[in-house]
Amino acid sequence: MRNQIVSSLVMAAVAVVMSGCASVQRATPSAPGQVNINLERGDYTMLASVKGSSTVKSYAFGVVQIVDSTKVRVLWVFKDYEDQYSYQDPGFFNLLFGTVSASDRAYYKALAATPDADAIIPKALIKQTSGFPFIYEEEEATFTGKALKYKSE
Image (cartoon, rainbow, N blue to C red; front, side, top):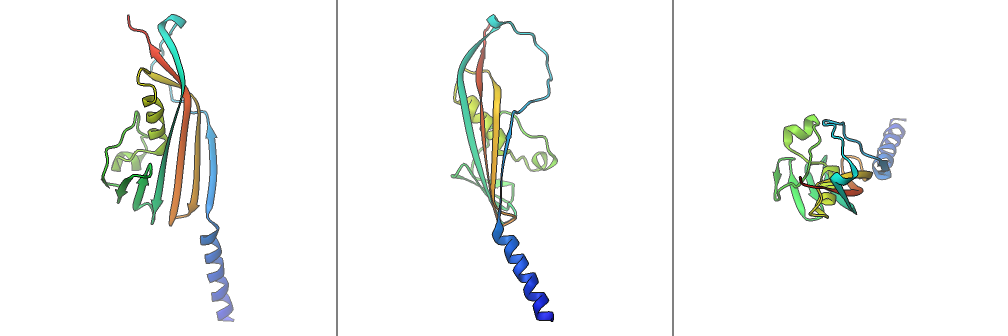
C-alpha cells in the first residue's frame, strides 16, 4: 500500500514537471499621466510605425538568465552587458536588484528604431511566456506603436 502511494505521488510530480506552462498576454499599455500637455496638430510630426522585441530565458529559479540570446546575467546582479531601457518597472524586486523587464527593453528598442522619435504612442504590447516552472522559462515581449517627433519652437 505504501509503495502505491509513493509511486502515485512520484507520477503526479513527474506529470506536473513535464507538463510545462505557456501563456500569451495581449494588452494596450497605458502609462499613468504625469503631465497633461495640450498639443495641437502643428506641434508634432507623426513618424513611421515602430516595433521592438526582447526575450529573457531563465534557468534554475532565474539564477541564470539569457537576455536577447547573447547577454548573460547570473544571480540577478552579475551581468556581462549594460541594460538599455527607457523606463524601469518600479516593482520591489526590480528596484532592489536593478533588473529591467523584457517589456522595458522592447519599448526601448521600438523607440531606438526611429532615432528622430521623441516618444511612441503605444498600440500593443504582446507578452508570451513558456517553459517548465522554476526549471526553464522564456518570456518574449513585443511592443508596437507610432513614433512622434515634437517640433521645436
